[in-house]
Image 1 (tube, helix red, strand yellow):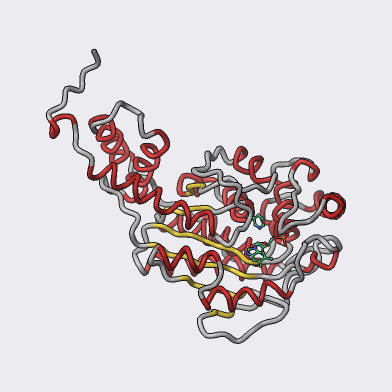
Image 2 (tube, helix red, strand yellow; image 1 turned 90 degrees about the horizontal axis):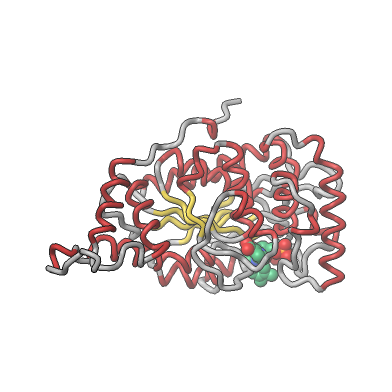
Length: 349
Ligand SMILES: Cc1cc2ncn([C@H]3O[C@H](COP(=O)(O)O)[C@@H](O)[C@H]3O)c2cc1C
Ligand SMILES: O=C(O)c1cccnc1
């Protein structure tokens, strides 16, 4: 079967990057005084091939999928919440719904396989099963399910391109997915689950200890078979995690900047980068989640997150929150006066 994710990624425009860098140094501020915002505007310029980058047209897709591993008692919430939240996403009540409405961005909701499917207007159904299999006992997905999930993400990136999106945000909903993301990180980094696993939706200490045990056992069961990132994704991932990886990879191939959310999305980004390392420059990391494993994943990706607000929600909420920062970084880059324009001396004393 054709492994589309291996195709080359779009090239960043290095001459535009150099022009944007030169412009930053001419703006009426001490050099480097806008810190990460300068690098952000310069990166966006290189990605968009435009010396005046913009982040006005957003594409936001949230992928939902249930996780068989929930039967091991690894989440503070029941599996049925995943499907129920879909109504909340389309009804406007979910955190991501509120944030994307504020940003003026339509929210695409895609059900990849929840245990209690609801027929809802505004939800696309690409159901791959009643959730994944229990990764504590067997591979989470069949090869076909994983490929279909990757393709579902690829197709959302393609819709983003059709809408001329300047930024892609992927979100996720899947009770139990911090377990899947932690197991993936443990195998891909590799690192002991003990240092990665956290409370997710709010497990107490005993709950976290049990979750660590479940993940350690799962890693022991699957590790020797996870000889490629694709095999790790199939055995330990989730439908929504595979879709996010597929979306990130296709965005990089199509030349669309991606704003990555929290721990779950970063685990998907880790899979994407391991599948095709050339996608890495297209990924901007919005925030550092309170989930302990997130820092290790960010470090492995050489990522410096924009925000650190103690968020532990997922959905894409942290990415949506960081959009105004990207917009302001672009406005400063595009609209500030140069020393020459403002007739201010740019020489140091
Ligand atoms: C009402 C509600 C809304 C959410 N929105 C995102 N999540 C987040 O929590 C889940 C992962 O945590 P765990 O692995 O502990 O189950 C995912 O669905 C994630 O998106 C939510 C969780 C709940 C309960
Ligand atoms: O950072 C995340 O993505 C996250 C953290 C806790 C629960 N759900 C998601």
